[in-house]
Image 1: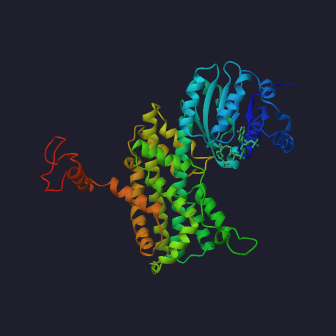
Image 2 (image 1 turned 60 degrees about the horizontal axis):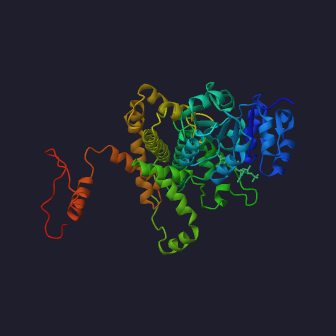
Length: 475
Ligand code: NAP
């Protein structure tokens, strides 16, 4: 029997779809799953692609089924399962075999695994894959953390299976070690911010503009033809169109208001804090999911503090809809400016030269945050690869100047109406602070010196260790 070009371990939702995608692209795949029944079921469902697979029921069989040196993708649960899988595979590996962790791993784990395997004859690759099951099946966005040599060997397969944007593969090398998983983490963080802001605007459309869900679906479809064009806007319209079969109501009316999370959004926020770079939009989105999940407590608090605010409306409905569109554009710019700043800082901290323009480019198709706006980010980095902030890019500045007043108007109406706007308010606050020549932080410096003699700098002369003539009570 011809040996396989690649191995794949883990035939869950993502692994099975990725295996089918690889086979579709003409590669032979040896497949293995811890629970044997899943391998059998996978083969039974492989239909016309069946001959492209070699079903393996032990790791020894798997290793024997792949041409050496072997690339093996692990698409298993993130965390300990990956370490266990690597250890279990080691006895069957040979020199130059490449172990590719394609799950949503913590990038610190990928750094550790990369370094640990560097002392062995094998190579570790940490690979972020975005796009959910559909992306895995028909073309995901792929963020690779690998040595140049390992990447050169697996690149043809990755380019083939990835999504394409104008014929360009949405797959690229981000750097060594955990660089791929770091970029994937921030992708998910930005995704959280995007989703939260869309949910907030839906509430404004409902409460301040009185639009039904069906009317909102039409608005989102229209927005999807403009600067907001993106997968998330498109699927929001699609979700709004769906009627629940049991109740006959729009499905959004019967879905419980608690949003789950698997951790990558939170990791983004934690990384941003550790790097000392603001990611207020991501923070707000993570916090909002936590608040949403605390449903029982919310019911109790809501009894004490009912929202009695009269909704603030717009006299001109279309003006309100336009303001909401601009609010989302401005919020998106703020969230991406922060997200890309975290990426740059994380790259510098880890000694990776993250390809910022390429990141924007490979997110244009295949992944959940794919959008037209990413073209503008890619162009901004093409024009100035060392761009310090997206806010400084001329095209983005033009867009922000146009959109920010819409965000401000939308927030004024929403907050006046008692509608929670953590994501969009964070975007506004972050942008407003970033454009201050003098922030209010001088008050904080005064307080810090008063109670802790931390010293401050002055505006009128050089030096770093000035103290105030504080009255008694100062430290
Ligand atoms: P899934 O359907 O739950 O499948 C999990 C797979 O991991 C199964 O094949 C399972 O094998 C295997 N597994 C679990 N623990 C194991 C262990 N200790 N040793 C060996 N194998 C083990 O999950 P999934 O959605 O495909 O996700 C797989 C990975 O992709 C995760 O890291 C996930 O975060 C990531 N990811 C998911 C998505 C998504 O949209 N679902 C998107 C991007 C990335 P058994 O059948 O034996 O249990």
